Length: 436
Image 1 (cartoon, helix red, strand yellow):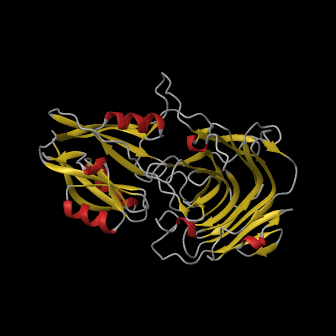
Image 2: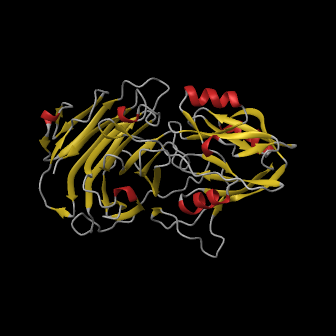
């Protein structure tokens, strides 16, 4: 879910803005990758792009999808990206390119140049899923094309052609340790592999987290937020997060329930990191712990940030997720927050934060911190500090003695919009910002 970092500053959705290269050869290999965090497949001829996404950004590699004609032979294929929908689209239709880029918020990848070409006798089918942020998927597999409608996908026919069909493989990932998110080099063993379909996956994540001993007092960091956090709600999505934000970057960690999440988190509650490296396309990533959470259950959550931008998320004293945000390194303008949000109009939330402890600039003292609700808007989500509802103004700044609760039913978004829709990222939350 996207949010305003400060008033008037809205984060951009993640995108893949890596340059897509071309090489002159009889055939061009189209590599297929899969992003299990948002359910998207990506197709590229650029081996470097493929390798970077696979080894550094958690994408699964699914082999050679098909072989495209040599550059200049056949119809040019353009790749577009929609930051609000978090989707890519491949098309040979220049009118479609014109309409989408001029009216609907899409941008052209590869500086507007073709990413590869369409031509030959191998058929490439396209399917569409309105319920998964309008995702499109392309496949040469007629069986896959016939099966996907059972999972909510609509068939759109043959949209591209290739010289010949490629060599697909089971989805392969860089191996992850039980601490989630940052990829580590693969071992010499074959490791684990799974076959990915859009919005499909392994649903057997554990929900029991080993107890640990990490606390704000014994864990070194530059900034830390620690709190007892509980989440409940109704509807399609809601979350409760600890947040560290600068004007142009942020990292957050907390509980998120989302019916639109990619499997195995669909309709379940996850321990989620949102890592925002910039407000530009390509600057935001999700990381989820390899555990499932429960609603209406109190967890002791802790988020730490080091001077070099490295962050760690803890649940009940146990490290569950880690990563790095280089933009947050050596910053003096990082502010600590807690936040509750709902996904769509009509979704309800109660996010409860208590026993809040804070460390800023390496200094931790056991004291009560003042906090301001002034960055909130009238959106149906109310903010309560120590049981008293506060207004969304600086004059209602007060010291928190016991707890913060965000509760209510989200209003104000059109029916088509949710917390991932461009223009509405900052309209779905209740938050308070601590004042040092």
